[in-house]
Image (cartoon, rainbow, N blue to C red):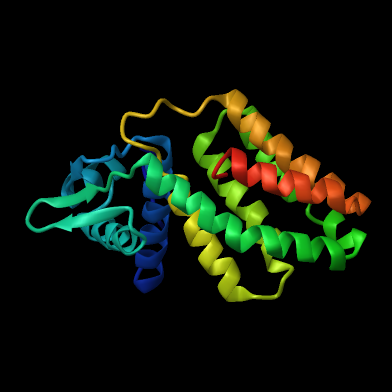
Length: 218
């Protein structure tokens, strides 16, 4: 796990900054499988690895507990929750029910120049995939989907879909690390979808959107 860089500020701003960095690092460790499902991790031990006190680690872990990633184990620490293939399939199904109709509606209403503005978001997923950066890809992937859904003007939709998306990215117990080739293929689906949206090819958009959700949870 990366260590948190030394902070020059003090007080409440520093505390929130460190907690935020710890939360980001823990989320990345979950996606990368460094925090293994079923394992228990203590705040002091993780704090030592990060080079910080146990307090911001516990605060970050409490947020992860709210997100459903870990559970509190009194006097022991936090256990990373395991999930099953069935649970991941359910998450993918719910995400599709939320996102597919919205994307198809947006495809009919959003002008070309607005879709053009999403090219950097699609490129970010491709760059992370090419580097084999799984945590970086997870962030870029959610950002791309979030930017698309944000065009619907429904903040609650973006929040709920983002939470479901994050949950779908936690690996199964004992699952092999996602291959770079799979990340590259998934990123290519984002680019193909964006090109179809820019071209106004509604038939291609519908096919690509449905295939994207049917093929993966990304």
